[in-house]
Length: 359
Ligand code: CS2
Ligand code: MN
Image (tube, rainbow, N blue to C red; front, side, top):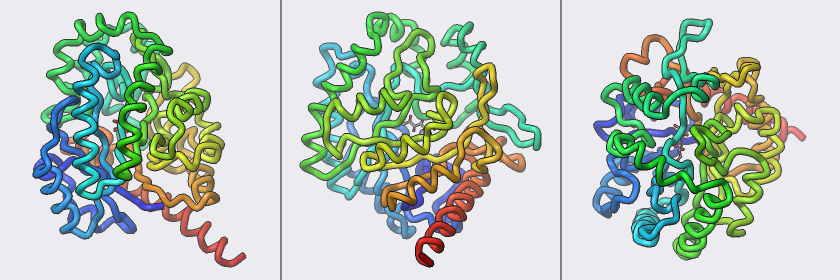
């Protein structure tokens, strides 16, 4: 596995590449042009500038997370071809600079959703929390306001204020889009982009929906083993692959994740690994990577990747906020817990490597 770290860019992240260099075994930086809204053109100079900076510190910039998809593509309306052309242009430009994997998601309107960004855990740290009943009864605008308020002056991918200001309009457009229709629109998108990816050798890696169930009446299509199977069949090419996120799938089916990894391993290009604790009423909170701390058995997950000799990219996904860092860090993206998570994953991986060598 190639260990990576999600970094938000020059002047957009308190954690610098010099900090990241001190975390053992991190070879790649997962990046994006975070000021770009979905559907905007990515300029070659900006891509090159970021890649050069990442490389100047000894890292690769092989993975981009994310190039976001314009809602008109998800809606399948008359503007979609224009936005798919722009997406293809970005794929080609990223390929030219050496990018290998693009992570994206196909969630209508919202990216990941939480009700509380700083919920306190027993140990005094705090983390992202989801209260199921609250989301079932609340107006989506209120959730958006909570998230934006919690993020303060930090940009939050998927929660762009420009877009959220038009929430009612957006919801109106989605009213006739059900799961089948969304799959159809996803297929249309893939059929246009995957041939280009094959030509320029860039792998697409869709991220599961978070939480893995429909919210606010919006369909969600990447949320279980069966949905993943269907997705991979839409265009059966290794370039049409997955970002397998244990944290996103966790609240729905934590115990099945190791078998999902084994089943779809050859189509997983990027692994997000983290743990969640799921309560009986469906609420969940993000916890440390340690298997005992939550419902995702991270030891079994890493074992599954090791068995298949996984050569793809891995990153710790979210972390708890530790030692007061919530005052400065982007929610879910502090330094300490993600670094601890990396050491946990290496501990498992290196032990398995030694065992294998001794056999
Ligand atoms: C990420 C997602 O922070 C996170 O939860 O895992 O926002 C992810 O980047 C997107 O869904 C992928 O497009
Ligand atoms: Mn993830």
